Picture (cartoon, rainbow, N blue to C red):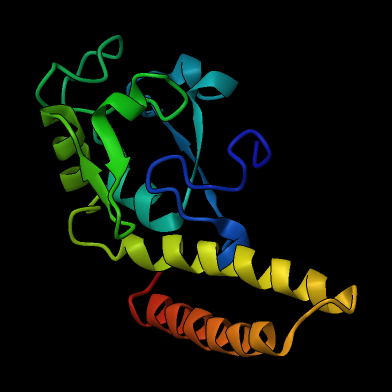
Length: 167
């Protein structure tokens, strides 16, 4: 399942590899509403602990066939419709594009969480890996060494902020 979600939380996009966090398995349609889908692979979502606990058994429509009513509810992260409702802005925050997306942000507390921290940390980790590869190959310039040190300091700052925020 982790590979299918690329080690990312299906709801907020947190990279589990960056923060070395053990993710949960969320039941998109809550088990409490549909016991038949408890082991249905297509009902499972890889979720960070914060998103899974925030979503819990919430299901605003109370109709297992309707995850949202056009104004509030949820969109399955594996559904192409997901990107119509949510996006990541230029600062790294997850924001709602539609009423349903805004509703999801509110119910999952994405509107008050620092989703930018782990997004930016993941971007920095990618840059660090690229610089480390250049170092291993003996092709890292003095300027790139300085960039590596600065990037590593910023990365560690993001990690510290994430832990402070309970992420």
